Each structure stands twice: as structure tokens, then as C-alpha cells.
Image 1 (tube, rainbow, N blue to C red):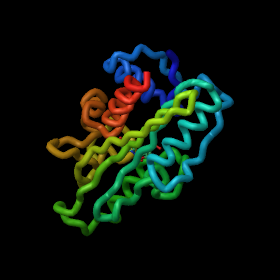
Image 2: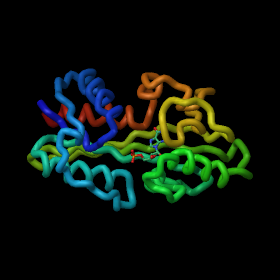
Image 3: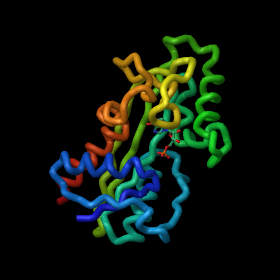
Image 4: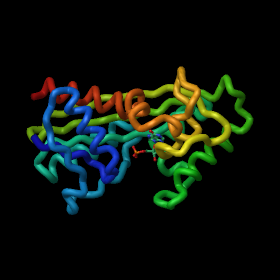
Length: 201
Ligand code: IMP
């Protein structure tokens, strides 16, 4: 069986392959690099689930293969759930090389006067599966934690250097990729989606 992961991020492919194998599904996981003509789908929906579905539908239609897409971001309690679906472009320089750092620094500035007991936040990942026959499944994974004041660690990406998961003292940028996948919003969502696929098959 072949599955397309609607991403050009190479790190997500082996993660998905491992999760499917653990669920007993032997699948070749392809990324969009295998489909250079696949449409670029703008993330125009107001929710993670909506954006994940948009991408999975477009890629399933283009490739004729089962397609998986995810959309994720950080929701900060003190910012009423923002940056949310705007996480990737929060500081407004979308696509710039230092975008991740600018986003993280803007959130830290916005929380400069927020005491530690009000610095709760969570990562959310929505994942969607669209089969060639039109069958769809959507799931969500969440990782709760809090934001610290100074970045720490060099693994991961995005807001990882300032995010400490509940029950941890290290940031997600100080965890190994395996440690992070075991608890992360994306790991949780992909494992739920693998179970959905088992049921569909
Ligand atoms: P996307 O789902 O790849 O579009 O990611 C959206 C944005 O959310 C990223 O650019 C990051 O800013 C943020 N984000 C999503 N997941 C994570 C994570 O695991 N760690 C840190 N930042 C994340």
C-alpha cells in the first residue's frame, strides 16, 4: 500500500512510517517531493482540522492515493488561544529564514508581564486521512505545557525552545526526537490516525 503525506517536510515521513508499522500497517510513505506537480494548498480555514482536510483532499484528488495531511500550532492561554492557526506566520515574516525565532520572540514579548502561573499553553495537531473513494477521518492530538522566559535547547523547531511539557523540566527542544514523538501533539494525532486507517482497511 502507498500513502502520500501532504508535506515537503522530510522529518515527518519516517515518523509516519514508524507509526504505521507499529499499528501493523505495511505502507510505503511518500512525501509531496514524489509529486512535483501537486497543488500548493493555502491554509485558509480558521481551524487546524479544516486546514488538514483541505490539504488531504487536494492531495488525494491529485495523486489518486490515500492522503494524510496535518496542521498544527501553539495555543497560548494568556493570548486567548492565539497564535493558533497563525503560528507559522505570527511575527509576519512568513517564509523568512529567521521566522521561527521571530515568532517565538514575539510571543515572549507579549508575555513579558505574565507571571509563571498564567503561562500555560498547548500544542495542537489536527490530522486528516482521505481515501481515494472519498472516505475521510480526522483526529486531533494535544500536548499541554507552559512557556518559559528564555529559549533552551536546539532540537525541534518553531516554539520548542520555550515550551516545557507538563511533567517535564526540559523544553521540547531539549528532548530527543524519539522522546518528543512519544508525547507530542503530532505523535498522538498520527497514532490515532493509524488506528482509523486500521479500521477503514
Ligand atoms: P505546520 O503544521 O507545519 O504548518 O506548523 C505550524 C507552526 O506551528 C510551525 O511553524 C510552528 O511555529 C508551530 N508548531 C507546530 N508544531 C510545533 C512543534 O512541535 N514545536 C514547535 N512549534 C510547532
